[in-house]
Length: 344
Image 1 (cartoon, rainbow, N blue to C red):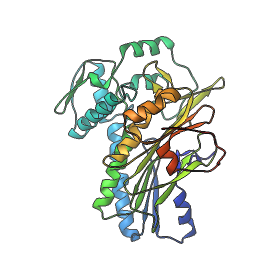
Image 2: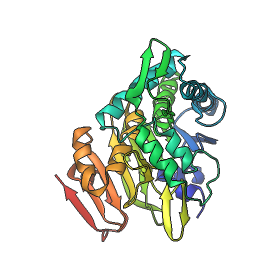
Image 3: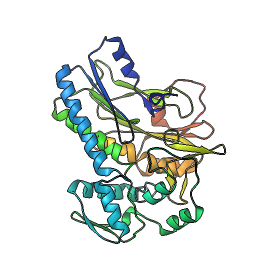
Image 4: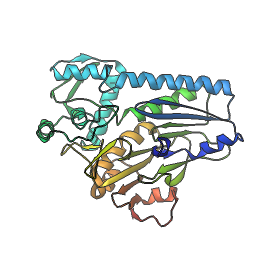
């Protein structure tokens, strides 16, 4: 399976560009540890290219600022926290940390960027993953230390932590934040119709000509889409899945999505997809899918209601699609025989 086929969302509309029949400008890059695509419809090529250059530059800036294990502003903060010290950060990072703490509280800590130590222990703070299980005693100690975003004390741009075990990893937040930044930049450049994809988190601006942008939700176990839907202006869709960052050992899959309650990769869930809109739709599409994934088949619907996510779905380990009634109305399943369970 190629890398493109493993993207959480297939950008089906882009296939038309290869035919040369429509005025689409597209560029791709590799940032945030994943492939990013920016597609612009109906603009002069020079104008579109300049706008995309600015977007890609912003993506790289955020990547450099928020890298969790290479030298960055975030890794400098983590080093200070580990030493029991405070550190001055940029106003932007301080704002991100406050916002991430808010989302974490809303999700009862299931979205928890403070568990970078657990993510590192499982080997996912690396470009390549080794099929090696961590020391269980280390995992137990990290779980007992209970690092939380609420441990952070943010006084203006001064940040410290009451808990030295806090190690911030914004991997479940940064892509969504970058989507919103990209949309703002494109609008500032006079771009009205575009599709932005960061490793499967996708936001739509305007339309694809006379119709809405059409995207597909990647099937977690097969090439191609599980379902397709139309994405309207200002809407974003995000997927958390166990099929991009994972390793397998003795026939068992271990993904990068860690349950902070037990310190282990989530089992029993293959993917969660949510549809968001309104202010900060990109950010919500990224961060808000994590609590649903972690809470699993029994808890996802409750957290969808708690977080006011009307359009959401979960694919369980048996391939059954659990989804809200509002989400079902938006989808066209590739295989109509797909087993589905609709919740109110």
